[in-house]
Amino acid sequence: MADLPSDVLAPRRSPRTINKLCNGVQMKTRNEDGDLAILSCRDTGLLLALAHCSGWSADRIKLKIKKVSGIEFKPEDIWSFHWRWVMDRGNGALCRKDIEAMLWVLKEYGITVSERGNKPLHTTEQPISASFRKVWTPKSQDVLPLCKGFNESARRQTKDYLHSKPLSFLGQFSPMEEGLTMQFGTTIQRIMRETLAEWAAAIQVIMKETAPYKSLKDRESVIMIMEHLCNFHQKYEEVYGLMEETTTFGKVKGNAVHIQSTGYGVKVLCGLLMADRLHVIDKIRKEERERVCFERMDNSDLPADGKNCNICQDPLDTETPEGTSEQGLKLIICCQQVIGETCLKEWLARSSPSIRKNCPNCRFDFPVCFLVKLFGEGYQMEVDSEEGGDDLEDTIVVEQPREVINLLSPSRDQSPEPLGPEASRLERSLAPSPAVEIPDPTFITSRSLSPSPALIAAGYRPAVGPPSMLGAVFLNPVHTHIPRGADGTPDFGNAWNFGGPQVERADDFMMEG
Image (cartoon, rainbow, N blue to C red; front, side, top):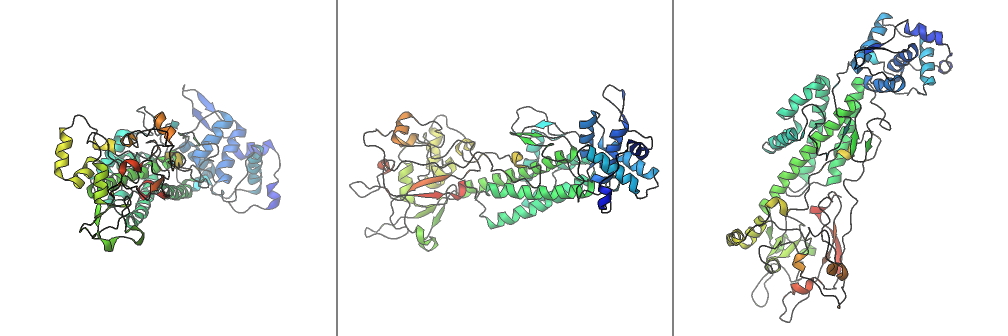
């Protein structure tokens, strides 16, 4: 539609003009009871005005017509109705009076024609509708899928498939997804495929810039999904017309997603396909951390500010007058800090294998594979002799499955919210009162969500927040000095109530930005 002259934007108010515009044709459909539902002449005029002047998609027009008339039409039927109306007029440009009538109708309904919304519906591609759940929650316990074929079982199937393939497969549909997306037609399938491939190429650049054992930063990953959903949104509108206004339709309320159109439903689905691939990447990197666990560091490999042990402050990989030296270990599996091997073994040897053993820096619970690598195969035999015990998955509490659906912004102009709860600063007091009895520190773990009254009185809080706290920046105060006993060795027992200098450190493994 060409730019409209200013005098045309003040149209005549003539209902007879609308009757002439519709040419006696009114849109009809069958309701759920099989009864014939006929759109009024005035509402038919609104439908034609929206189709020809607004640039809206058939999905969006369907929602508006249902709101004003109570009658629901299929987007395919709306597109066909407008196409036939244009063909009956000889496929020619609208005359001045027709444009006046349409602008008057739009003004009567409070609709303003956007400068960019001027692509007639019949020049777009005919849509294909698909059924989506009207209200869908990522954490819902029910078994109803988001759309036909997309349920938890199908998602696990895709994750298992991608986990068994090279990373290059991240940008391709899995066999399940290939069949799933066919219901949307070849055009939407192509747009989804392009979006997924572009996202995979971008995320692999980030992966190459990040050590293979490090988790990708949550916020950076989510923003990348948002950017590619914007690309999907734009490509969709170029083919089908403007998607529905997200201030009203498809709005995320709480943790539930309200879906009222195929376009927005597919956008949500596309975001979930990318989120599932993030889960696969997380799993691969977690496995790499468990494989590596830690690296032994030579003095030449240590950074300038990391030449000393984080616990005892003795120089690392340097021979003492007594002829001993402390080997530095870089804790790949958790906080990436360098710590003396002897100090770490002493710290971990203070309790029996049945009690969780954690990092003295970040309080990450070490899995059995880490302890076996540190202490040798004999440690595994000792663990096997103990009764009970949790499996490996339960020992790693800082890695929880991520869902980004609450960040799949329905609007390209909407800024993403932070993933998960707000970042928490988890602090310990510098010096507990001497009058307070300090409990056994081995019972302070990342699973201690409710510290005992004695711990609270002493000023302690959990070193790591609740398991649901993912995507937050974990800032842990780190003791840079550990008190020594009479023999000069580090006193790990008093390390818990030592009031020495502390520094705040954001652990790479547990932070997002």
